[in-house]
Structures are given as C-alpha cells and as structure tokens.
Amino acid sequence: MPVFLETTAADFEDRFADLLSAKREESPEVDDTVAAIIGDVRARGDAALIELTAKLDRLELTADRLAFTPEEIEAECAKVSAADRDALELAAERIRAYHVRQMPDDAQWTDPEGATLGWRWTPVSAAGLYVPGGLASYPSSVLMNAIPAHVAGVKRLVICAPTPDGVANPLVLLAARLSGVDTVYRIGGAQAIAALAYGTETIRAVDKITGPGNAYVAAAKRRVFGKVGIDMIAGPSEILVIADADNDPDWIALDLLSQAEHDESAQSILVTDDADFGRAVAAAVEKQLKMLERRAIAGASWRDFGAVITVRNLEEAAELSNRVAPEHLELCVAMPEALSERITHAGAIFLGQWTPEAIGDYVGGPNHVLPTARSARFSSGLGVMDFLKRTTLARMTPAALKAIGPSAERLAQSEGLQAHGLSVRARLDRLNEAGE
Image 1: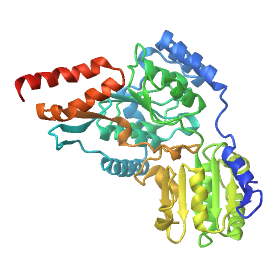
Image 2 (image 1 turned 90 degrees about the horizontal axis):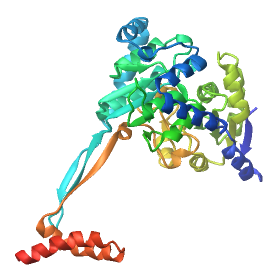
Image 3 (image 1 turned 60 degrees about the vertical axis):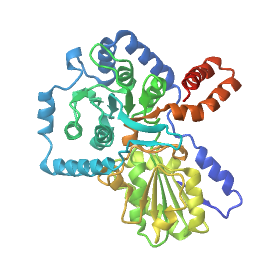
Image 4 (image 1 turned 30 degrees about the vertical axis):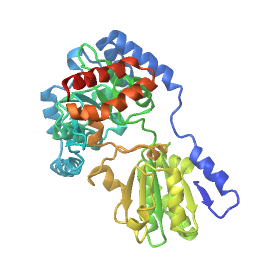
C-alpha cells in the first residue's frame, strides 16, 4: 500500500521528509563495473564493443555490422503499420513545431561608449543520442532527442539503440528516419556511452550525449561528462498529481499508474484537498492495476514509493509540490493556470483534467526528457538549447577603449595580473601618443 499523509498530522514533516529521501536510484555499486567497461572500450575499441555486445545482448557482431545498413533500416521501416506510421509522423510534426519556437536569436548592439557587443548561437558539431533497448525500447525517445538536435542544426547525429538477441524495433528506426538520423548503432549500455565519448575504430566521437538509460548508462554519462557534454543524469520516472474532488478517480488512478508502470522504482504521488477523494483514487489504483500487462512493475512502484497526501487547501498543495520538484506535475483542478503560477519547481506541468501526462510523452509537443530526483529545482527538460552554444562578441573602438580601458587596467593591477593591465595600457599609450 502507498503511504497516506495528512499535513494536519503532528508527524507530517517527519514522514514527508522520509518520502522525499526514499532511495529510488539504482545501486551505486554499478560505478565500478562501468569504470571497467569504459576503460576497456578506450583501450580496445571495436573489439571491446563486440565482446560486450555478445555477452550482454546475446548478439554477435563484427565491426562492419555495428551500425544498421540502409537496407536493414528500410526493411525494418517497411514493417511499420500505416496507423503506427501516421501516429509517429503526427508526433514528429508536433515536436518539431514546438522546438522550432525555442531557437534563440543572435544579437548585436553598440553601447554608449561605442563598443560593439553581442552574442551568436552555434550548434554542437556532433551529438550521440542514446535510446534504450529491449523492453524499454521507445520510438518517442528518438523523436524527443533527435528532433531538437536537428532543429538546432547539429550536422552529425548518431543513435545508439541496443538490440538484445538481434531483435530491432521497427518504430525506433522509423523514428530515426523521421528525425533526420541516418546512422543507428545496435549497441547499448555503458559501452555505447564510452564509444560515443572516446570513439573507436568504427564509431567517431561526438561532442554531446543525450538520452535516457538504465543505471549503467547513467553512471557512464556521469563518468564521461567533461570529455563530452551530457543532458542530465536521469533517475526513475515520477509524477505528482494535484487534484480536487471534481475529478474521476479512475482517470487520476490511471495517470498515477502511467508512470508507475515504467519502473519498480518510479514514484507516483497524489496531493488532494479531499481525503475521501484520495481514498477513492487509491481504491481505483488497485482496481486498474489488475488490468495492466505491467501490473507487477506498476504494483511494486505504487506499493513501495506511492503516496496520497491530504492538504488543507490547494495553496498548500503547491507548496508541497515545489518541495518535491517533480518531473511531471498534473494540475487537475478548476483553475489550473492560476495554480500553476504558484509552481516554481517542476519539469513539465500539465494543465487541467483533460491533459494527461501521457499526451506529453508522445504528441503534446514539449520534450519528455525531463529532470528527475528533485533536479527540477535547478535544471530544465531537454530542448534545442541543449544542442547550442552561445559565443559572446565584443569589439572596441579607440574611443571605447579610452573610455573603459583604464578601469580594466586598474582591476588587473588589483588582482596582481601585470600582463593583463599592460596589454590594455600599451594600447592606451598609443592612443595618447597619437593624440586621440
């Protein structure tokens, strides 16, 4: 059973703190294994990838078969039904339209001293997109990672998508094609992250790695950060639903289960101002669980990490939500926009009872790669900006340097950096000699 909390209870703060500190991330012991895998790939390149893929994915490869051939991609895409293709194309279209609006503008201006200042945006040259394989093989993850990169203008995009037992997901390959990605490697795990970061004889290194994965993938991304950029270290999925009594308990139950079915370590929390409604939702969860194919996974998540919290009012609900800083936040209340103005920490907000989080996973438009484990307090979901770099621009005229240069010289002297000051002073002296 999930935990039931009430903010009016004397022990609420202690129990709420326990809920926030519940350890849902995978065991850190995987880090030693990951370190060894990364070292092996760096030392032996393709040979290490081939051995690890045979061992972990039961797939025998050679260097020339690490990537799908164009003919293989074509054959797999042909297996996709017309209905599935239409749905995937709709999703791609909406995701692209949303992310195009995120593109920032370059800027340049002249300040009162005559200096020209500004910035410009340029994409990273190459990005590696990780897509989970096996039971968690999601074409939606391809769209959410590749389309923002393509919109940003990244010239070289590659995907690593493990294919255990050699079984590919046709929808994943079609999603890659719709997203403008031609190269898909059939490798996964920490070894794929190492190959993307350091390169092998066959796989060229990239500048940035994005995409979700298991504990080994997360640990590998953490280890290669600095050599390459990464999007984030993703933990188990989570959802918090703020709902009043004017909702269908079955709807809210299904929303909670939509994240619980991802992973036994996922977390689903209901916050409501009506205790009876909270109990009705909990009962609905138990009923709906029986009909899910992934009921064992969802049931374990709900049992071990689920929670129903009764609050005095919706303002208090918003305060608790900000403390949780959830990956996904649904506001199933009469005036969701007004309540959303009280939210300062959330990866994504879904407004109103007609906006289930599942829409955001597929066809809403905003990205579904979002900060977890309370990191929404300081980070954002994946987007175009993750594949762009801002370069600042500055140009001094003689007059501008004469106006602001002495202050730069003074600050350099105060910091004991003589050459800094002299590099400015040399130019100021030349201006003085010229009488300018």
